[in-house]
Image 1 (spheres, rainbow, N blue to C red):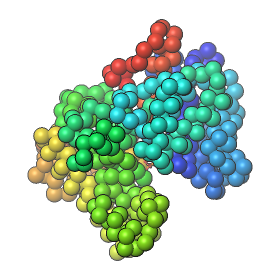
Image 2: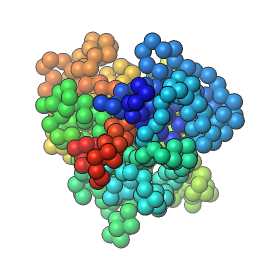
Image 3: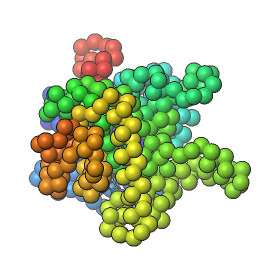
Image 4: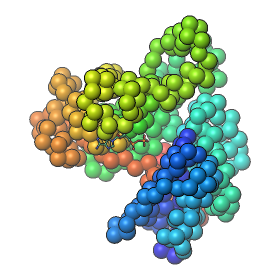
Length: 407
Ligand code: ADP
């Protein structure tokens, strides 16, 4: 492993830092992945180091993850303990917003950093954390290639009609558009479909990324045609703590009649709504499934209802449906949600095989189902590692930006 190039992947959320270490000699191979959560509060660390190695799970002291910088230092110390020889040739960052122009990963030059700072107002809750993570990584690895992978990039193939809001035109030019997010996950699923089911990949596919953040994407031939998230990662499906689609008139009402400030509304929409808001109990689907209270059930009902609505809408945008793919923590693990989403969906060609669904198979539709139903575990970190590897190879062999086929 000593001479094999290694890439570190970083995914800085508002209160979490996901990290990964990949050997990128040939196809990227995962050496370690981990997560520090509750940064600045009661931080916890979880990490795994491949087969045969015991996973790590422990509470951290507040000083070990006071902020993103100290959390990165803690993550690096853990990685060094396990891989003392490894030296990162490249650091790949998940960056939430790449604006209208970045449709592929970019090497982080001062000019690109400047553009990402300019885009911060478009993602005020996430982009500053991504930038802080990048700055901390540049300080820790001054010689490494720093690469940004954007959640929005995958959706730049949207037709314009799905990029616009019906606002006065000037706002489109200012960047007020439907960007779409979770692009790294959709990119990974598209690649997996191409590998394991190429005919399905070439067709009309809806991917439901159902995690704490949740969205859906309609693809044709592996390219995004439409998605449920829009200008921000707040739109579309209800999520753990986010509202999902909401009539903007509600905002006017809350501000003008309830006397809430815009910051209070934003905090409520991002952090107190969704499954948590409706259930009054938890943002965690496992807790809601176990609770069985009327309010928890209502929260699940709404989640399922909105997924089914979007399924119909996206299928219309695609002109039909050849496959539905579930991924994300809920999509990969909750047989109940998959069953409820697919119930009575024969009209759109979806027929779930309950036994395959319960067994956790990859293909969970019946043999007679007109459209396939699949479960594919997503891997955003691997997409970042692949981009880092491409840039390392380009540094060795020339320069330029990788084309979409290398994303
Ligand atoms: P994030 O968007 O933070 O990456 P994840 O993709 O890890 O989130 O998904 C987290 C969600 O997945 C939580 O709501 C969690 O309850 C849910 N989840 C994980 N395992 C299960 C399970 N076995 N059954 C139902 N939900 C699950």
